[in-house]
Image 1 (cartoon, rainbow, N blue to C red):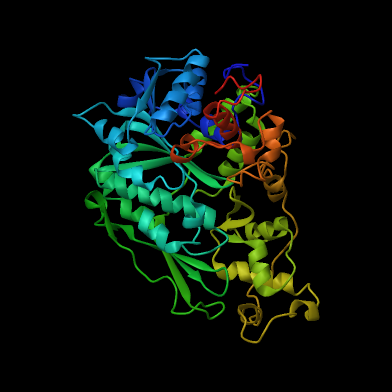
Image 2: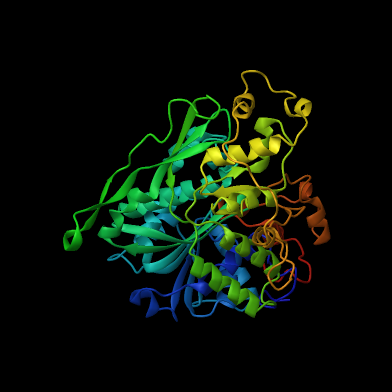
Length: 518
């Protein structure tokens, strides 16, 4: 069973790599002539290739690729990937194994030293930030940069000082932390691009299980770079309740009238909040700077969905991809971050109303609302915080008084929020459009899994426990007796299925019949 035989569950399509490659170079649009002229001969760099699995998938599954440089700084890893290429009938000049430091290779690809790549894939262990500056110079005009970061503990404020050191942004804890992680990474990428008179255009930005993955295009334009401060901002997060406010770094204003009218970038006005939260009286914590512009390109995502619907059997995880992309497409693109319904109700010590009821109440007041692909209970809306609290105040009146106030001290945020009477009466009757939005089926009645559970053998679990059953099912020895070589620890990350096959390759374990991949 070679890697290019579609539909085999053991052909290397793990849950991590399938979404990655399903959103990769195959769907590169062509808004600029420089890329449009070369779209039939893309040069791809897999900068941290490890066993070469993703490079093989690009070569065997993506049309229009001229060559792929599969790079790793570990000679042992490069020797492994070279053997993997031979097993799958691949070799130079289509796939070129390369031993080099990724940063040095990226710098050497900048003119006049070398030729830029149309597609660059950065998928290291942990943070990709050390490679950003070199990568911004090595991507061709209008080319695509694909980045994976697995250090969510850093990005989600478990280690905020480390996040500031790596990404130049300070995070705060919140239910929106995974979306904030995407915005911190994009903001860091934009800053590095601006230093070289370039800017990014996000195509798809997703949080999947324990990592984030972003796909951006790079363009050179000094005029666009001057607008970058308007896309960045800070978050004022209340320390007592889920309320938050956004402070842009800069804003656009119109000067002059008629033919002399022009737009100018000026400093943002603020702060957007008083010294203490107007809802609960607690102080605010400041996070940022981070990306505030849209995370996705709607047209690009719709193109991906069309491709998946037109070729439903091309990928093993088509159902997962359709669900994830549908959820992404439903998000409000111009509303950064969100509040979570259960988090707000926990502050008030009340039971949560149905999400359909809250969404319907907001839409009846002419506000826009959606969920987030990072959280099924998210409320992403342009309604002010006060309107959200008013809706929950109305809901709290349906809860028995004794139960409602249970556990609320006199100084708690929930007590102060509930002490105020709502300024409006919420109508919780479900609206048909909201029911359709939250439905697990599309308009044609086909079931869509927008929020699928995490697979059992998923993530960086311990060798002795998490992956034992997966190793056993593939005929490999138990994890405790399978020493992985440095290839697995010093090179680019691979997902669970990939790691098992790579471990077999690097330890000379007899692979199962479907393991010709590596």
